[in-house]
Amino acid sequence: MPPYFKRRKEIYRMRTIKLRDYTVKLKDQEGNDVIVPYIVKNSILTLLTARELKLNGPDLLKNNALALKINDMGDEALLEEEEYARLKRSVEMLQGFGQEDVEFIRRIMEAPEVAVKPIKPEGELL
Image (spheres, rainbow, N blue to C red):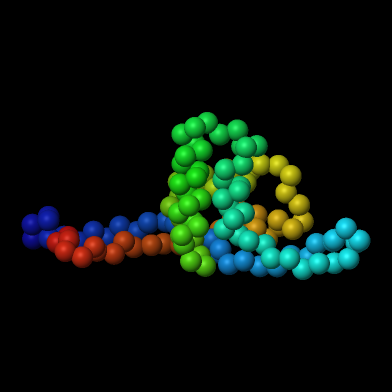
């Protein structure tokens, strides 16, 4: 069989991160418990473009592109290893997280690895 008829059987390793918002319990000015939403996608945008990361211009553009890509995803992000490494590195570099950020950080740092097989685009012969 000619090589151009052989199908590719590549399997890619990717990371999946839950993007669904959740709630956290905080204290208001009077010390009362208040339940507030934790907006995951906005938090990722803020994380990836934080001044405290001291990003140079090209890295800021790459982080911003990744944040916008994640923002356009549904309830779950599927990230290539390079994208995941960029997000994880931002978590590791930034300081000042609190108790309300634990679930957010856990979702990123413990993102499960999944095997993904590419699908054949329409009209492609291979």
